Length: 237
Image: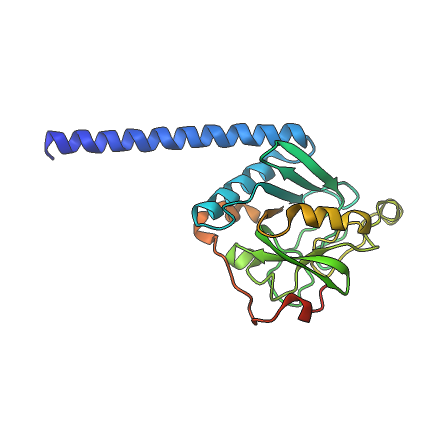
C-alpha cells in the first residue's frame, strides 16, 4: 500500500474510533441522566431503549421524536414500571403502573410473543401512531419496529389504553395487577394525558427477557398496516 493511502486509511480509522468513543460517551451520559430522573428503572433498560431509538432514527424513523416511554416488565405488576421521559427538557413526565398480557405470567411476566391470539405482551421498540376512540375508550396505536419481537403489533391490535383492572389497590390484595390480552394498559385516570404525551411519532420501549436484540439496528424496520384498514375498524383489548 502506498504511504499516502496508508496515512489516509489510518486517519479514517482514527476518526471512526473517535466518533464511536464520543457517541458511546454521550449515550452513557444520557443513560445516567435518565437514571437520575427514574432511579427505580434499570440502567440496562434505559441503555437498550436509547440504543434502539438511535437505530430507528438513523433509518429515518421517528427522527423528530423528543419523548421516550419505557416499560420494565422485569418488575412486579404491583410496582410502577412505566416511565415517560421528555428528552428535550430532561424531565420525567409519568411514572405509572401498567398491565401485561394474561398469558405472559402472573405478577412478573416471563413469556412474550409476537403471535396473534397469544394474549402475551411483546417486547422491543415501538413507534407511536394515531389515537382513536374504541371499545376501551381513548387508545393509541403502536407500530412494532423489531421484526420477530413485535412486528405484528398492528395486526394483533396491540394498543395503549386505560382499563379499570389496572388498579394498584386491588393488585395489593390479589398479588398481581389485572391483566390485558397483550396491550400495555394503564389506569383510566391517566390514560388520556399519557397517550397525548407520546402520540404520533414518539417512541415506546418494552424491556424484558430477550429484549436486548432490539438494539441491533438490523432488526429495526417500519411496518405498514397489515390489512390497510383504519384503526377505528378494529376491536382492541
